[in-house]
Image (cartoon, rainbow, N blue to C red; front, side, top):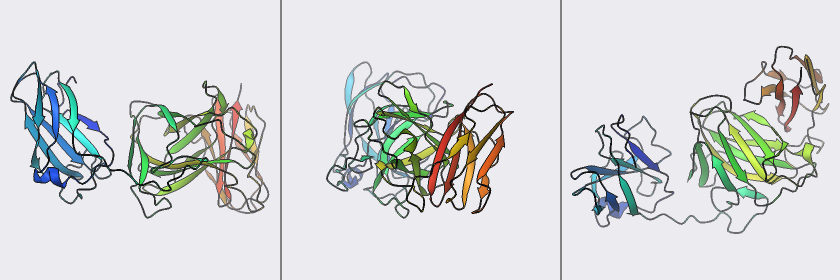
Length: 379
């Protein structure tokens, strides 16, 4: 590790997963050890055990259950440091709620230094009971057992964490937390399904999201294993409100029968440099879901496509109240959202003469479900 010389509290954050009861480490019955190759003797190394659902970058001491320190005695050679409890910044955090460890070297001092670390021992991780304990083929990820996705790449920070809200529609204990990389305009997660999707006219790709920075756009692209687009974007939506679990549904009816979808690309808050934290859980394929009262998928008829100056969409007659929106692929809403009531004109039109050439998405969402259809402006 090369310490950042302009930071007085230069940190390494490790999402270690749920830890077992750390009471013995706080009492001193057990000790944390770490092999260190330090640049000089007399330098403090600190390990802070935290609850990541409470501890934020600017809210110290909240969420910091315990701080442990050790001091180097040599330089230019390896030594094993044994850590002792130094502080309990937030004793309200239960000893069973720690899921993150933060390592600080020579804290409170700005210095240019080179450090090496190895063999970090204690505390142990917990074993989370499966919910349920058998494989569910159509569930690709949940925070407990079904973790069949192979995540290949992501821009931000991805970790399995405790569910931040057990009172909502998602009551399972864990979820996947994603912190957006503020240095990326189009921040993405790329992953592979366990096998090619079996897609029918009523298939829906569904996931639960908990958005700490709502409103946010989520765009899902489906691709072949080689990265060729099968359909992009499938859908785009705003989470309903901040800090509340929401179920997002992606309509697969337009690619029914396709057998080449093996990879997904999820864009979270695309087209902007911004802070973002979302939890993702229960990514699955279902059939049917997000259907209208007649039991048929909600299909949007959009014309002309490609468009030049105007574009229109025809909604199914059986749709009730809902919201109609148009997005660009970078997540910008191109015109004010239209709140439509039952009996509104079934054909809705936009003047797109001032919009740049490119791909856009019309999205309908209502009590019957949601649907999205892309179109292209070509001039």
